[in-house]
Amino acid sequence: MDKLIIEGPTRLSGQVRIDGSKNAALPIIAACLLTESKSVIKGVPQLSDVFTMCKILRTVGVKVSFLNDTLEIHPGGYTGNTAAYDYVSTMRASICILGPLLAKQLYAKVSLPGGCIIGPRPIFIHTKGLNALGADIKVEHGYLIAKTKGLKGNTIYLGGPFGSSVLATANVMMAATLAKGKTIIEYAACEPEIIDLAEFLIKMGARIKGHKTHTIEIDGVKRLHGATHKIIPDRIEAATYMIASCATKGDITIKGANINHLRALIDILIEAGAVITKKPNGAIRVRANRRLKTIALTTLPYPGFPTDLQAQMMSLMAVSKGIAIITEKIYPERFMHVGELNRMGAQISLEGNSAIVHGAKNLSGAEVMASDLRASAALVIGGMVAKGKTTISRIYHLDRGYKDMEKKLSLLGAKIKRVKS
Ligand code: EPU
Image 1: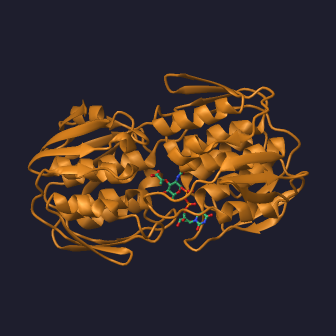
Image 2: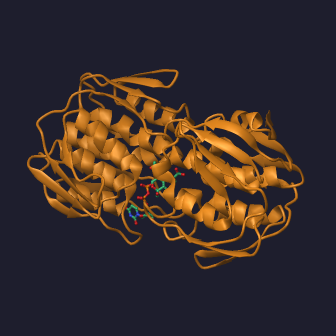
Image 3: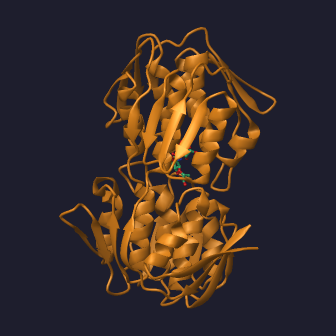
């Protein structure tokens, strides 16, 4: 298993280019199962989660080839309909093949994802939505088995206890494209990744309206065709570098990101004292000349502050001036990074789903363990701020969602290297 060794403190400066969005790419790759003909997806990041999704498509009989950042997906007359535990247990997003398989094959067998380190992660919103379209779903031997004689449009309220669900919206929207009649999804997620998926489906011939809002309307069609599409930039990757710039009192220019997807973060970083400017070429410059001030923030569905940035913000707040309160309203248990950051000298305590962060002047390098993708990024930020050597183990989590992170950070001046252990 690889480890990252970081020698801190570092002040990051320079330019970094953002890759395509992992969370947009995964459901779009799954959407290719809705047709027989070839799709070409550009700007796909070469990440282990993307490779897992490609493997799942291959196991159901789809031809998939990756050249640089372009994926060619040729479903032909694929006949498979099962996603096995091995894949789903490594990547929960595998669940988003349920909707397309069911719509196309009228049958899908997908391993239940179970819990994960960031919390229980149930899937009843997915099944509620697909049931409303006419699917019969049961659980047998750890698998969800979904069958239908033909999906029919319906009006479906998709809200859950923590608001909208991104992948449940994706699953129901994809299934509804081939259902008979009109589907209206109320309380749909409106994350940029859902909009990107809807735009890909429209290119495939789907009839979708309202996908920038919480009410999506889909008029089912008989068949879809392949399409060519470029994935949107990864807003979480961009945001992670923006936060890293602030934590290291750096000066980074982010290239290739969409500033409109980053409003919640920009608002908070400016409040904390960062200087953020948009350059004429669309690049975003993020500077912090001194320690930032602490702020209060709460994670919420888009356009609120993303849960996928909560851990990275915790590292920034751990070295800011004052006391920060960070409340997690999407995954109330997503705090595994707290103990690891405290090993580096951070002063963070938990009260329910809130973290109280007493900003420290410095952190000190330590041996720490990554617990999930975004927690890994938080530890990398912590390691670049801390004095001395930080060793981060289990960085396979990082490889699920950040392409070439140590290379990109090295170019920005970080002393970071990957070692095999
Ligand atoms: N929820 C339910 N029931 C369900 C589904 C979800 O209660 O049936 C709850 C969840 O437990 C959570 C909330 O609803 O409390 C929102 O979860 P959501 O379904 O939106 O999460 P997801 O679609 O499974 C995607 C991202 C996650 C990101 C969340 C929230 C992908 C592949 N994954 O997951 O990304 O945290 O939305 O924005 O798009 C990551 O990239 O690190 C990551 C975990």
